[in-house]
Amino acid sequence: MALDEAILEAVGRGESLPTLRLYAWDPPCISLGVAQSVHDVDLKRLRTKRWNLVRRSTGGRAILHTDELTYAVIAPINNPHVIGGVLDSYRHLSAGLVAGLQHMGMSVGIEPEKQLTEEERGNPVCFQAPSAYEITVKQRKLLGSAQVRRRFGILQHGTLPLKGDITRICEVLQFNSEEDRISAIDALRNRAATVEDLLGEPLSWERAAEAMSEGFRQALDLQLESGDPSSAEVTRAEDLLRERFANSQWTERI
Image (spheres, rainbow, N blue to C red):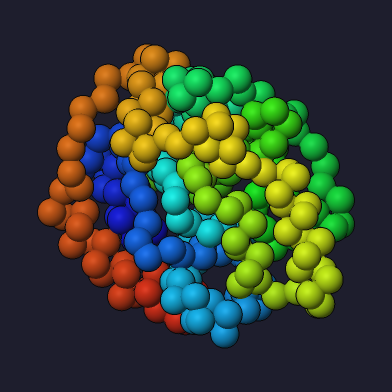
């Protein structure tokens, strides 16, 4: 999360090129949306699991990052691929995500914008709460995304679960009762899926990253060059880690 933010600052200043970043997580980590209450997480259960906790810069609900591909699109605010409002840019960038999933062998749908019910607004799980223009396969949510817009740039990132039990996140969230936890597990299993669930076979992180890169390249007519973060971005990320993302005053502030 700190490196995403550092790249956003550098891109916004014109010091770095617009960036498509693809990465994974170790150890597993729960990320909270920027405005989500930390009380949605059962911290005792989280410590027992030895999973980490972070608060994102972007909105949305809780996500368990493990066995997945995470993407980040980072661009200056005047870049033609992100101009307009949040939904305008999200619709445009979705073309790259959809093409990437198609390269993985999936038939993809985009759900229309919808009004959330009170129950959905209060749901702590990202993959159980519907979002505008979310990407689905066989009517099951596959890819969750969120966005933050600064005066100088935009960061959109999201997660593509590749394998494993999609309901594991429910093990470390707060519920009023175990019956409510079981109900949430059942609902999430019916609503969301992993790539392996849908393809019927495993797909490696490397193959998924290759397909996603090709999807963005083709759908948005981009020229992508592989590379590592700059030394300035890494140094700034280390500062942001101390100041914000590894700081309990940020993570537990709500």
